[in-house]
Image 1: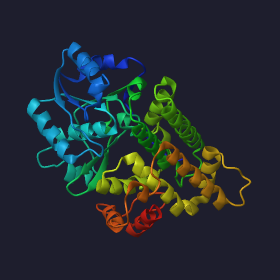
Image 2: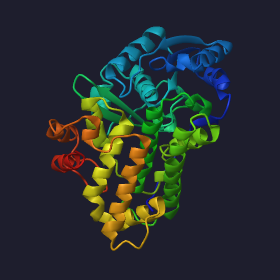
Image 3: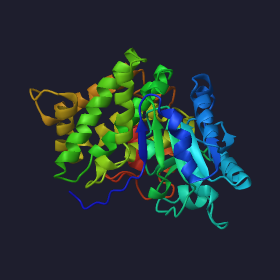
Image 4: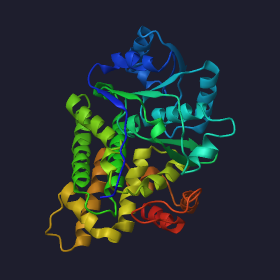
Length: 392
């Protein structure tokens, strides 16, 4: 187990009826609030009215910025930064899923940057940047998936150049996250499925490490993976069952608040490769991960086959009666793909209507601003191209 430091200040307020607390939670951070959200689903399911009522009851001034889309756009981030400066915003409240939260994080630190620094050029395009300060941020989570409600990360897309990049910093961790599983009842089945794939990917990225002797984290990750596999399917079958929605929502938070990857170095190549797919084709992040992860596994598993055998036995209950280790791992990958299919997700680029026209372009784009992707194996452009071809 490696040395580590762990810090996560997000207050989690979880359960039925908790949205009414958002005003009291927010008022400790200032008077003027930017309410940031997506395309309007929160107005249909009643979340918007609950949030606004709570903010008004706390005597807060509310400025709104909607319009966040999946793979959140740099253009809206820039609009939000200008709006926050103009309106002298003290605090940002993101109401929605990972895309809304990621956009809000970018607006939060972009608003307070020095005049000689740019949110995209100096931060998202530089993986080793340090975010020194940000407007404080709170969250009302309505889609369990990205884990951004208590993570260090934000991912934004420069759609004009088809580049999707991330920033990670403790400075942008939300101050609080209000999480009511009842808000998930009206989620479309495909959105629930993509969220489950994203949660599972966060766990798998952390699980596939070359570090040894990190047994507690291994077993916690395995348990969380089994939870996602079981309860995502149940949530699809019984969308209004609180128990299944609650299990999935809480697992999504634990999957990405960095608690489960202490003392180890995760991989993250599959995320970086998927960013190229969704940056080019604008598909849902979870759907892209369902395509990439099995292909990545097929390409690298022999680098540490015993780790993959452990994954097969403990997560997928593969029988030891298989002839050899390769057969055990291949059976686990088959079951992973079958799980994605049961969710209704693509497992090949062709399933998503994507051909091989841009495979080399995506492989080369993945290297922009960095020498390699991944840690389980350091991947270059040729490796990424081979993985994408395996995913065809």
